[in-house]
Image 1 (cartoon, one colour):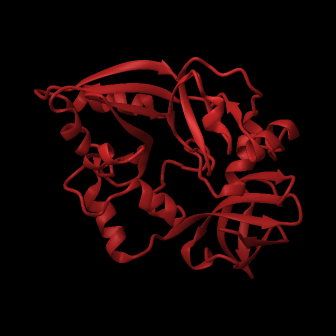
Image 2 (cartoon, helix red, strand yellow):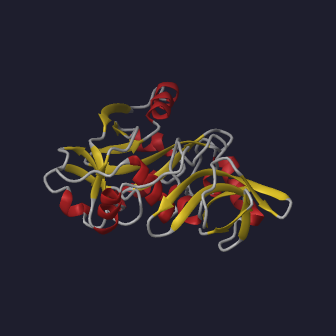
Length: 282
């Protein structure tokens, strides 16, 4: 992935007011039926029973071996659950394979119209069918229908803002080997309940949680020079990780995401990347 550089208009709108984003792959679904909540409870990492008391609930769908297959955001809406995910194929497959005698109906609503992010997002979505959904820190809404007439921010700008905010992106930063606990603490605490009952992959995630750490960690690094994606990250002669993607922020300079050995992932740790100094930001 090439160095991401933002369009300045969209970047400023996201930071100071609001902009709409055509977020690739985000699909909306409803899940209903007498057994819907209980069935979903056995498929995702967070406690679905909490969703009625919250503006939304974040969760992961993980493999039996604990790696993330998809990330899903859940809302309680009337007598059904609303789901928005960029892993629609995973959700469809789970329903097809694991709904047997349960009263569970998955309805596809299709791609969302857009997502609106920024401190003035709530005002921007007046008149639209939208649900609260911050995706880049701060305020945000996913728009299901009635797209607002407002400036749009391009995907390259999202790539920059996500690194500024320390937000890992599904299908960008979250690779096929990733466990929830490999990401900064807000991600794990917001997506995983370690107190709920059984679900696919729970045993592995509980072992990782009991151990207190994973072998690697995803982190945002900052430096003064451009670094190529895929470049090794080193401490002295030891390779401790590799770069996933890079971006140039108008306010923070060069940023990159990387998977690092956990011992090298502490905030403020000084590292080298392709002979250039970098530091763990978050």
